[in-house]
Image 1 (cartoon, rainbow, N blue to C red):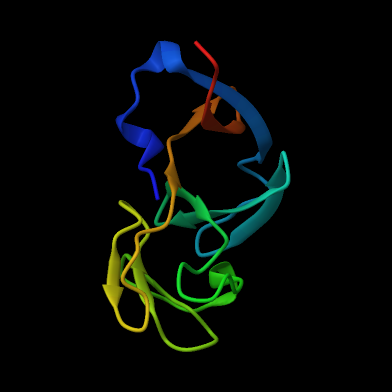
Image 2 (image 1 turned 120 degrees about the vertical axis):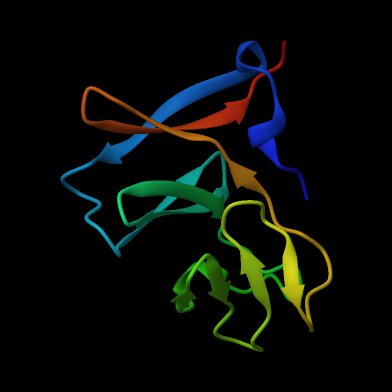
Length: 116
């Protein structure tokens, strides 16, 4: 998968997915953009966005528990770093997509690649 956080800003299109009032510390927000399930998380006031699809079996990784900066897939225990999307534990060995997140005027926005 791809770490979209590494794209230069002009290659990203930011879209609003919610407000900071809707995503309090320790909570998750599930959205779908162009048929892509994405989960946004608030960890101690920092926002992270990852693909809500486990690379092991396409399960909903966002439903898993978070330990530090790791999310644990509830199906088979695969672990991913929510900052980088890196697969950390089997059975997953392929990384998952991560998206840049910013807050503008209280709106949480995620960056998606545009066609430029």
